Length: 218
Image 1: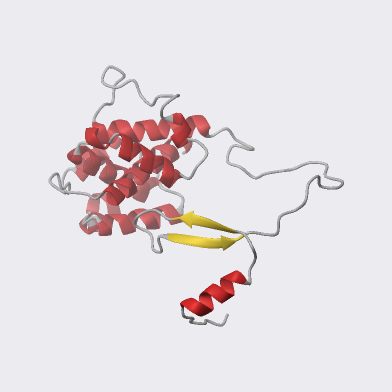
Image 2: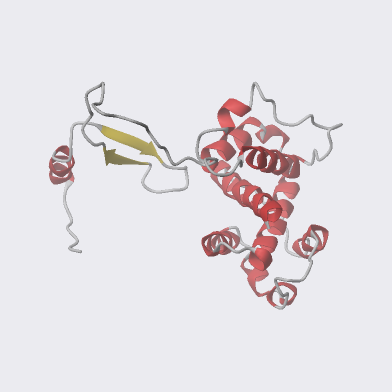
């Protein structure tokens, strides 16, 4: 594939030639560029002739995952706020919270929750929960892309030493490692006084969410 560099004028010309309508996709705060522009195919005139059915590929078409997603999102909030019991927090509100955490991307869902409950987040809980989730993913994770993302996040957040910890390196995936033991290992590295930006808290929370999600599916 040929690579071509262009200035702003040429880029505008190239994009304009792709169509009349475009979708503007905003990226998470930590992703460059801020947004991406994608051309849309020409609109079709309605009614469509001889249309028999429309099939859409959506999460939940063949399996019901919404309940699992909601549980994992709520679990993540409980972990980082320290409110693990119903007595301390009733959980996500179906009327207030659900409209913001169903039907969009995982990143958008987690961004909403971190922003909404940010004043309740306990820094040490965030660090400990992230580390425990990361350790579980390294040992038991099956999704290589997830594992790679977790490894990158550990390095980014100053926890590179975890990757060479003997208790992790020499642990076999089939061993039944309880989360409590992982939390004990994480305690050796935790940075309780770390000040995290909003985008960093979101990245940590996403790893906590996915760990819970995959732990239940395992």
